[in-house]
Length: 344
Ligand code: YSA
Image (cartoon, rainbow, N blue to C red; front, side, top):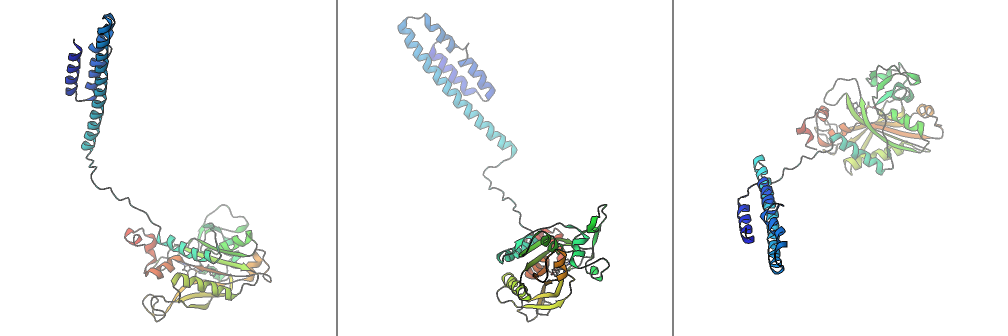
């Protein structure tokens, strides 16, 4: 077969090739060892020199051309195959992308972080502690011995544990105050910590009570700490969280681990103290319990109460978030209703 004829046939046949399998057959037929082109190249040796040169150059040119045509055809067939697969799967690459769903922090977490951040700027460290506690830390070391009537203030979930040791029974902590003891046991003054964390109480839920909720504890102990430091710190905290003009009210309250003990309220930021729905027409919003650390508590951890004094406080971040956002039922925080959670 003439070289030119080989070229014409190969190119004509390549036009009819419609898949990769047929393309491989074409390659074997026109570029393989037994192809007319390879045979022609092999037979060149028997020709006179002049003719060998001319036909050799022509045969190599045709080989290069066919190899190039093979690569182009292969690329075209592969592209067509991809396009067909996408078409079968119904992928329309011209559609706009789907927006990924972004998560967000739970409103309680946002509130806990905002409150801790204020105290961090006031020089407090953030520490965390166990939710499963010993009676000793939750009650005894906080001046609440067994059978003390003050235990009724905290309806407790007890844990049936074989381990008892010298720290008494195991329980789910009812407040974050046990961390006051744990922190003082392992540090020497000065102490300045805030402790966020979950607490548990065996109580019926209602619009302002959950059986699992958060508290943030604060503790400052050093030489010369007075009630004025407590007032100044809480006042600054309230102004930073609720706005610059807030007034603070302290009224006597009872907690066995402080002396004196107080309940702290800020004037209502919604009505500026005039009285409204948010503050129940009192003009005040209660935000925490607080007081000067009881000398008995200091003695319990080996601090000399004649040398060191301190203040402590405990607040509920859900209640603060309720005040801030006008939420009227604490149960909304933990009932996993996305319509509620997506608002924050
Ligand atoms: C008091 C004096 C201190 O020197 C230090 C801490 C304290 C607070 C004390 N440990 C305590 O637990 N007091 S408390 O029982 O009144 O709770 C404090 C706050 O926790 C409440 O003001 C409220 O915001 C929140 N809280 C209590 N029980 C709750 C609750 N939040 C939701 N559901 C409940 N069941």
